[in-house]
Every structure is written in structure tokens, then in C-alpha cells.
Amino acid sequence: MEQTYSIGEVAKLTNISIQTLRYYDQIGLFKPSYVDEKTNYRYYKDSQLYYLDIIKSLKYVGTSLDEIKEAQQFTPAQLLTFLEQQESVIEERINRLVEIQQSLFKSKKQMQEQIAITVFNEVYEKDEEATRILTIAPKQLNPSYIPNSYYSSLLKTLEIENTTISSRYGCMFKYAAYENIEEIMYNHIFTPLLTDRYITNLPPEMDVQTTPEGRYICIAFKFTVFTYFEQYIKLRHYIEKNELAVIPIVYEIFMPTNYAPNETDEFIVELKVKRK
Image (cartoon, rainbow, N blue to C red; front, side):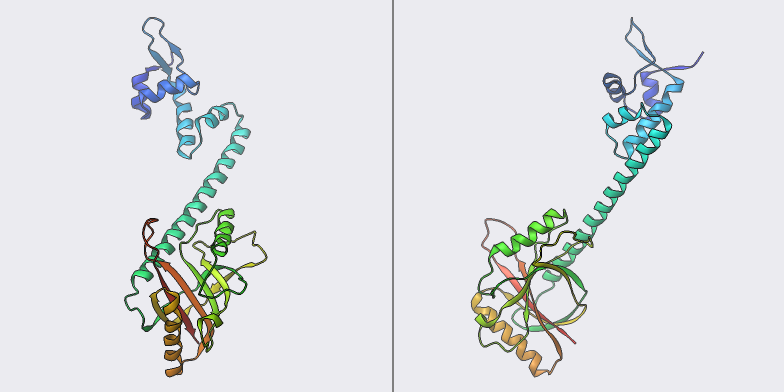
């Protein structure tokens, strides 16, 4: 006669709680071989424990109880197909977690770079890695005013792609000897991409570019329209005084100093030009 176990014994043998075994019985996922009519005790056959192993294995990979119940009716060939489908689901989750890890790493790096700026209103140099950016081409915009609609367009594109969004934005314009701030016209507005994911559906006015790796000449300051041009002149004078060869593109990075909605808006701007 095949050995039987009480619900408590099965719980100990399989490391599944009595409450869970009762619930499995209630939903028809794993029922005892018989129930004593007088005591209402549940008893399980030794051969039944194999099915609990399958349930535990499928639960471990994230399969829902409803899906497990459905899989119990499969033939071996159908179960193989089902397991292959579950494998694909797991691979998608792993890829998503890798993306999240990438975005956390790059977000931390951005914060570290911002905190590392201890010199304001003076020119300094630093080395930077290449960075992928999502850009949009604006129409007749300069540092005096940038409509939020441009940033919103970048944000919307990233949301559609279901990728991570950066809290940092930037602009690009030609490095030149401007007479006033009104002469500065942005070629692109951008946000850094925090993952390596390929963006599949880019609007015509958008592009993915890469800022070059290398040494940059920089100046950082608390943003106001009145101080912006003064700081740009300092940057240009430093380059000219030291007779530095540069790539004629200015990267402007906009960094918030707080994230509380009730605090006064305050931003740090970093202007930087890459040395050749």
C-alpha cells in the first residue's frame, strides 16, 4: 500500500506552509488524495509530492497560479512549449533589470558629477566619457527662453519607448564670438539617454547623437539670463588667451539643485567645449 502523509507532514517534507496547502486544495491546484470524513483531515499519497515540485518550480520563475493550473492539463509536448514561453518572459525581465541597472548607474554618475562641481563662475577643465543623447532641432531659440514643449517632446518619445527618463537636459549651439545673448541660437535641445536601448520610433525632428569623449573646457554657474552671457564670455576668453584648439560646439547642461515641487526653482548651468 502506498504511503500517505498528513498535511502537516507534507508541509515539513516540501517546505510549504499548511495554510498554502489548504489554499491549493481550495482552488483545485493540489488536492489531497482523500479527506477523512470524521476528522476532516487531509491525506496525500507519496506519488503526489512530485506535482508539488512542479508547482514550486513554476512559481519560482514567476508563473501565476492560474497559469500553473492550466499547465497541469498539458501533454509533455505542450508543457515544453509552455516552458519555452516562460523562458522568453524571464529573458525580457532580465533585459529590463539590466536597463534599470544601467540607468541607476548613469543617474548616480550624473549626480556625482554635479556634486563634484565646487568651482563656480571660473573656468576649469575635465575629462568626460562619450554620452548618447536624444536631440530635437528647435526653431529660433536662445538661452533667454526655452518652451517646455521641447522637453515634453523628448520626454514623450522616451515614454513611448518605455525607457528610463533623465532629469537632466541640455542644449547645443555654435562656438563663436557673439556680441550678446540674443545672437546665440540653439541647434539642438537634448536629454541624455540612460540606457543602451535602440530607439525604434524617432520623429523626423529628433535624432540620437553621441557627445565625444575627451577633455572639455567648462564653466558652471547658477542660471539667470543676466549672468549667462557673462559666463560664456569668460569661457571664450580663457580659450583665446590660452590659444586652445577646440571643436566649435558648446554643450550647455541644465541641472536642478532641488527636486521639491514647493521649493524655488534653481538651476546650475555648465557650459563646455571640447578640446581638439
